[in-house]
Image 1 (tube, one colour):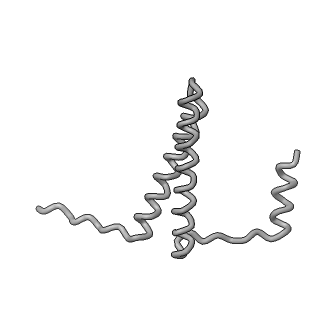
Image 2 (tube, rainbow, N blue to C red):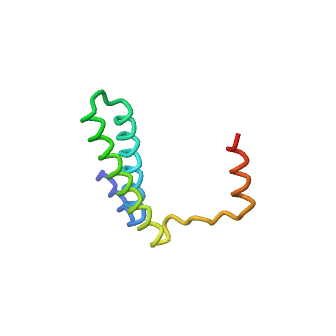
Image 3 (tube, rainbow, N blue to C red):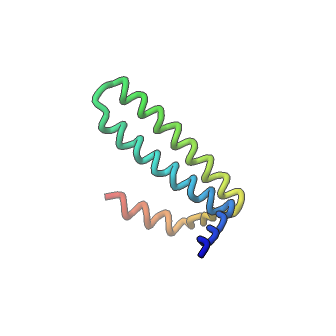
Length: 88
């Protein structure tokens, strides 16, 4: 019996996977920056972290433009609730 043909990923699924990978990479660089033992290594990981965060932001922007990552604006009440929650 032949193996089933895998379903092709949609553009949205592909970009979601890329965003998840970028988030994971950023998290790894963040941890590596914190744990680095020399100044040179720390600076390199920090540079890589900043690059990965910028890449993640560009991917997020592309997803928003395509309607694949909708966001909702917070109203004043929601903002005040968060401020009071974390103002301690």
